[in-house]
Length: 499
Image 1 (cartoon, helix red, strand yellow):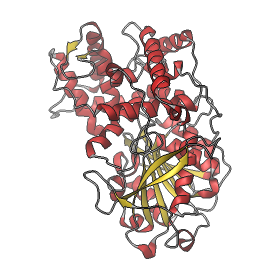
Image 2 (cartoon, rainbow, N blue to C red; image 1 turned 135 degrees about the horizontal axis):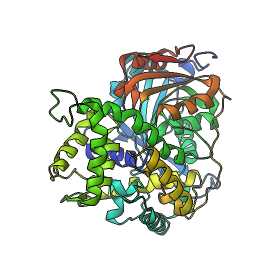
Image 3 (cartoon, rainbow, N blue to C red; image 1 turned 45 degrees about the horizontal axis):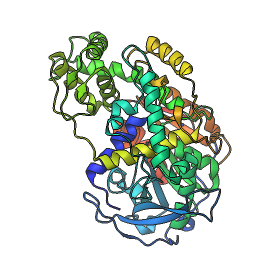
Image 4 (cartoon, rainbow, N blue to C red; image 1 turned 30 degrees about the horizontal axis):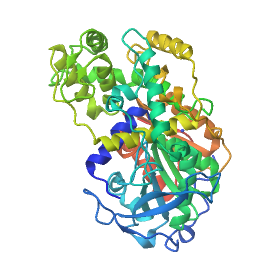
């Protein structure tokens, strides 16, 4: 159950790299029904690891590896909690659903959970978990070659000339390694399995209903859980929302980067051209985009050696990957600017610190398994070549990556169940919060989830830039709406915009 701050950072970095939404306002659950009287069957012990709140404790929940054979092999789901800070005001449990796929929220009760207002921390036990396949839950590993763990390799960037031959070869090699080394568990890591695990966690906690705060991929998990177990949900907040298109699922998320980058890059350009910025790249915002494109093309032709990095050179795709990562939050804008400034002079900054390789291996395996087991991907190279060519022409910043072939192209296991279609059937207890400019889960896709939920949901659109809105990259107006809903159940009667 050990989780250091470095490990938590690795979960975030790698899962983000692999990818990464009116009736009565409250449900009928009363404080007494879901509150202090809830009986937990769990054996809580002190969590291992550094940087954790001393109140945080951990336990393990046993679940079936294969829900089609509930009496078969069992695996462990490790969970954490910080109990309600005011038992008399306790309403129930608030599950913190991580992003990814491949993210963990095991440390979140000690981390972002402590940013929640006091009334919310009084009302709920804060619950985190490591989803199936992620250590310290029963882990899975594909045993990939070190080079295939490079972030610029995990996202399918085409060759400088638009060729995808290397991407197809990487997909075959990676999928074969997962089949060879992933064991039986690799076939049973899906969003539906995670939703079913969550309901086992709810039952083990002794809760009749569960509140949740899901972020990024966690919004899709939360939506699927709300669809499969609608009467087991209390107050549900979905933050930075995935497109729930049941015909495409993760393919739609990958393609969303085209829109997301176009939404956010102008904000980077304004920042990077501002007078007084020590990392200023240009005199005007209009100059930044062509500067980036010229620099990426130059690095395609003449990479710069980068000792200690993976790969050990700064090429055009490494710059593009850095751009994508840096647009997740304005706080990362300087990372991209500093790299561009160095590259213009033919130099590189110190190589970024790499997460421990066992963490990279574990997170990559869980992410690949989820993306590929959820929905079948096309296997035809011709289809990807066509999509990449169109994407490169329409969206040169992302260079065709969002429509390219990744590991799922060669995944050896067909999906065992159809993706869940999100519908308006169920209690009206969902609040969506969404930044207007989000590189990973753009507003255009988030509106698809809002449409799918119908009268079950209300959406708060926040006029801010960055991935993760509530208590992160949003604004005070959006934060107030979400906090009020979690603490009191009060929800806007219709969709609102927070300027």
